[in-house]
Image (cartoon, rainbow, N blue to C red; front, side):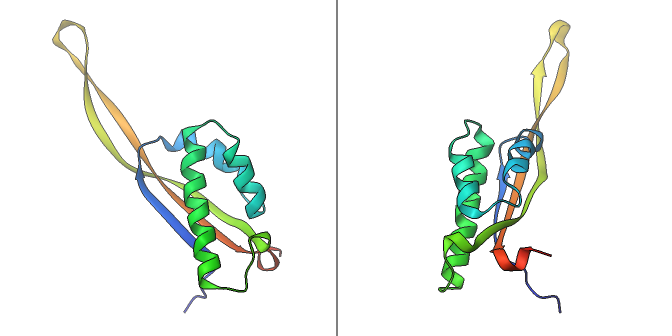
Length: 120
């Protein structure tokens, strides 16, 4: 059986396109937990707020599961932005035609781990 790595939090079916969230995620991957929170709090993007909520949830899971941990010891070991289902909406066009508007959703997975385990 595979050993569980890190402490995880997942948010599904978020109404934001994965292509808009991924550049924000690239800025905080492999950063210390406190630094990642500071970066996300300073960013104006909607994706930054969503990642911040999931990151704080993963940090709380870590601190709750292992009481001897401190926030200074945590590192963002994984940050995945996956594509969720798409809502299909009709967009009226001229001459009685229509286009399909795809409203994309995201799934965000954050795994935080102790800093000593992340280094190879």
